Length: 337
Image (tube, rainbow, N blue to C red; front, side, top):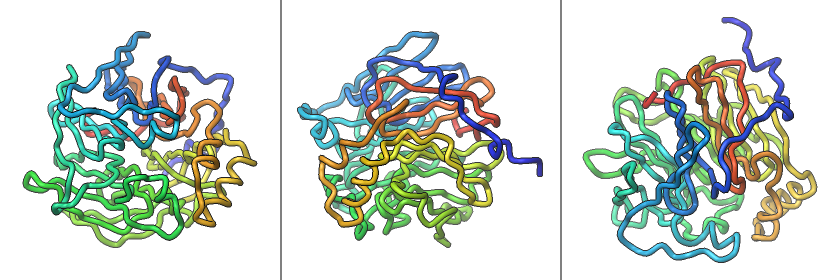
């Protein structure tokens, strides 16, 4: 195998470029082969970014979205599109972290609810949605606790993964510590799972029927101090790129599981204060919202795009624009590519 292209790669912050302005919580980003970007937006929908222009497309859905007041309220009340994926017909699958449901939105904004319960119980905090090459839809639920900030604990593992089967979502793996983004490797032999409060990446073997087994931690058991992993994406070499949200870091795990930090934008004192509160199970809004700074405050996701899939876009929870840079290797194409 050739030399891993990320081993000697450094990011020059002065060469970073940005796209978008006035965005609201551009957590998840989808890229299309024609150069169009779609970003989740806290106003309830997605923003289309193409050729220097942007357009907000809000969801037209029955029901009332409660308005948010303070910054903390915005993460606890009303609509909050989080993870995005393209359905097979090009519509948007939206995991709505605010309404606690999986939604389907057409490109004109018309929306409907696909799931808001599992086994007769509320579905919980739906975080991410992913479609595989067999057109199966997978979702992650971070926690069953309504106020997700109360789930930022070391002793809680109530997150799960569900898959759509026969028109109904079924839980296929359980017991995760704040389940976040999930990704398949190139052959869809393993499903990689972000455990945010676990501070690690887990993976499970996937059989031909989509059954999951042999759960294990991939890479370090903890991705460093202040490690709250959020978004991940594979490149074509097999490296797993990811973000650490509250400490604002961009990292890479090699196919062997070795860790490299490419960007560190966090405030060490504020990250330390949150770390102490977390380890003592006493996280409050004060410690949490004090963090988040740099090029993409509360760095949340990684997306490969551009015609050659070598442009890397960084999503964030507090940012109002999207930074991007050129990678030394192309991203692994998503199923919609």
